Length: 383
Image (tube, rainbow, N blue to C red; front, side, top):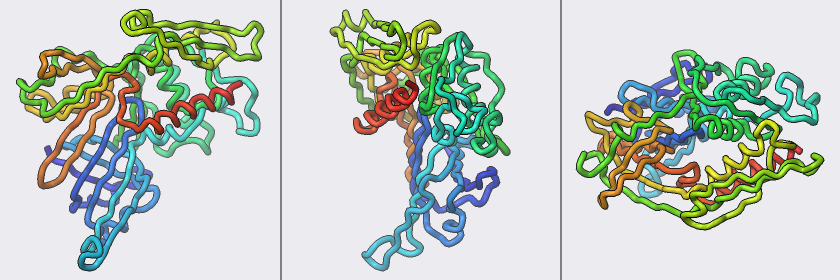
């Protein structure tokens, strides 16, 4: 595999291709923005490229692996002798992928109106295809259909894929991507991502594929170097959802995973719903989201190597279901939650995948807690 780095401006115009990079670490995440860091020699012409508003594009084997804005364009160190990095020093760049752009938005109840004219109601879309709902939320909040001041430059919707099932959404001042994830989960387990073309950043929805028969990792196949496996008890088996306390009568909906409760034990969780009632299924959706997030999480981290027959990004991708054959003989089939690329010019590259439930993550507990609190605060504002 060959890796090339490009620096572009906001309009996707190439500003340079830093040749002397020493290490690359980039992680793609399912339905979440990816993250990455790269270290390179801090030559003056390189530093001139690394400016606020610029983007970094990682090209792996002549295809874009990750592309998006630099969050920290310059983290530079230099020193004489044993005081630090020798001239010209080393600069570290922290970047993300373009899915971070819509991640900075919240859902407005009336996206076509000014902020000062927002109503006390929520944005509600009922009995509609999940892909259509996600595309609508993105388009009206940050895409071509949004208010001019809220539009992301060079951002557009890709052609519809025609995937997903019928669902509904009720949202007000929630994180835009958090709302899209809820719809994607309830509407057929969909995925969404951004994709860079020569002149645009395209947002697209897709249906992950069951590749358990073709995407297989094992020691015998020579594509599995290391594996760690952990299965935990569910953190919720019965989601007890409440509607708005202002509604009369107040709605109460129970959504249960009876199989998990029978296998392990009953675990109840109170869920503050996003709607007044369950007439359009929104409270049931909230409960199913809670069950999915608290499902008996399987965390399966693997160190894999690409072979002629199986390559990340070509033969399997984010959200796809793959099979890992453990040295014990047990076969585990789970969704690909993230793909982690590490590379240096000298030692080559390593690809690590993380599989499991939505909560199978390497994020610290505090990060997960902040996500939950942010979602709850958004829902409180919806009341």
